[in-house]
Structures are given as C-alpha cells and as structure tokens.
Image (cartoon, rainbow, N blue to C red; front, side):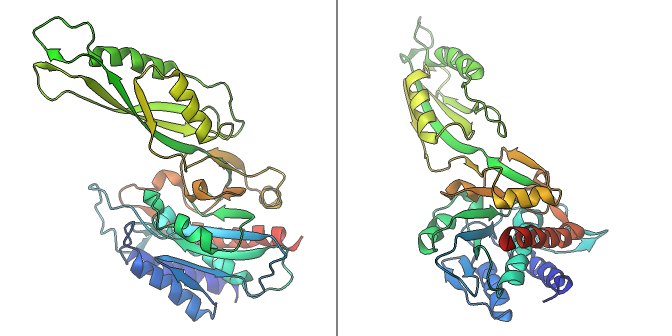
Length: 356
C-alpha cells in the first residue's frame, strides 16, 4: 500500500478513535476499532482484554523482535474544555479531540508503519504491534497484562508525543507514603513533640536532599513532597502527620536502591513505597534504532514523563508525533501534518534499522 493511502486511512482511524470514548479501563470499543483495521488489511491479530496485537507475517523466532507499542485509552476531559472532546474536527490543519495528541496520533502512525512492513520478508527484526489499554493509570490490565503473552521482546519503540525526536531515556517513578509521629495532646497544654512542627524540619530535609549520581540524559533524581495531611480538630494536636513523596528516578539508580536510601536516611518514622515496578528506561546510543534516527535528523533527549516504557524489561525509546505539552490539556489537538510526517519518519527509521 502506498504511504499516502496509509496516511489517509490512519487519519480516518484516529478520527473514529476520538469519537469513541475510551477512558482507562473502558476501552472495549476502541479495541474493536483496532481489530477492524487488522481485519480490513488482512492481518492476523489477537486480542487480550482490551489489548490488541499482531506480529509480522514472516515472524522468525531466530531473529530479535522489535515491539511497536502505544495506548488507546485516554484521561477524562477536564472542565476547561470548550469544544466537544469527542468531536474529531479538523480546523486550520489541526485535528481536535480527546486523545488526539496523547497518544492517538502516535498509535495510528505506528500502526500504519507496522502495516507497511507487515508482509515484508528478510527483515533484520521481527515486528510486533500492540495497542494497549490503561496506560494513563498504569493499570494491571494494560501492557503489564499483555507482555507475558507476547514472544520475547528485545527492543521497543513506545509511541508518545515527542515531536518525533528520540527520547532515549525516561525517568521512573516511586510514590512514597511517610509518617512523622508526635505526642497527641489538647492544644491548650504545652507540647514539645508536635508532629506538625516536626514535619517542618522534615520538609526542609526533603527540599535539600540530593543524590550523587547524575544522568547525562535525565539529570538528577527529583524528590518532591506533594501532599501533607494531619489533624482532625482545631483543639487537638495530632499524633501523626502524613506525607506523600513523588520521586522521579534517573537511569543511574534502580527503584529498589532509592527505596533503601530513603528508608535509611529520611528523618521520618515510617516510609513505604506504594510500588517499585515503574523503573527508569533507556536505550544505548549506539543501538541501530538510535543511529538510524540520528541519521535522518532526529535529536536525542531524556524524558521526565512516564509511559508504558516503565513496564518493559528491554532497551526502549519513546518516539512519536505530537507535543507532550498538549497532553491532558483542554481542547487537545494534533496537527494533521504531524501525523503524516510521523508515518513517513517511522517508516524511514524502520527502513534503515530493519534492512541494514
């Protein structure tokens, strides 16, 4: 199929996806739209819950496998929307609608590129395309549910809006719950062990806390206190003050290392990680995919935002049309030209990497 025809069909699919609500955990209808694409193009495919996937026609288990992955769930529209979030309207070269930028443009562009290469023989890598659910909530029924059912993955491209530049590393995430304990008492009486006052010193420690290892692509580990909760009555000094700490982890540390360091050093009485599964991701700069991208003018950078890369246990890069700053914004949009160029650049990148 000609690239121009793929571009037209991918744009129509994206408009259909936008017009079909697919909040995280409620993606059954958009999964069906992906299945229809495969049926229309005579591509064998499988569905697991709301995850839809296919592998290249001449899959060879002796070759390494490249996963092309993006998600078809969306967040819920925020209250600042003026437009109908489910009306996929094109105006002045912009396609408006919920999920257009995050990550519908990436999804349909990767799908078009996969379709382009589906029936080609003698490629260096096998290809697998996976359109997955629950990315926005890091849910258990998204890529985490699908990965055990796929053939072994050696490397991955995760479709997220990067202005078609190569995010060669991505920060991981740990959310910690911490407790500062004190002595409860009536507010009218002296108390030198007030958990709220003690928390002021704890906040100062977190504000100034630094880890030694700095990543070339991701910078420092970023530790941020994002929530505080204490007390229930104006005249009662609380026994505990609760904190939530958001930690964005660079590729110099594992999540388990960060947990150990904070448990040893943080001046709190209790600190517990909610999960350690969202690790940082990276790909070597001398990998075929990175070199191919650089050859065609793509720039490399480190991404501070989280994606399904965090669920993968292989080298991976994040790459896609659209701009991350538009994600989750009111009246979300993507330029039609970005989708057309995204398909062209995905195909050019894969052409170089798959046929060398």
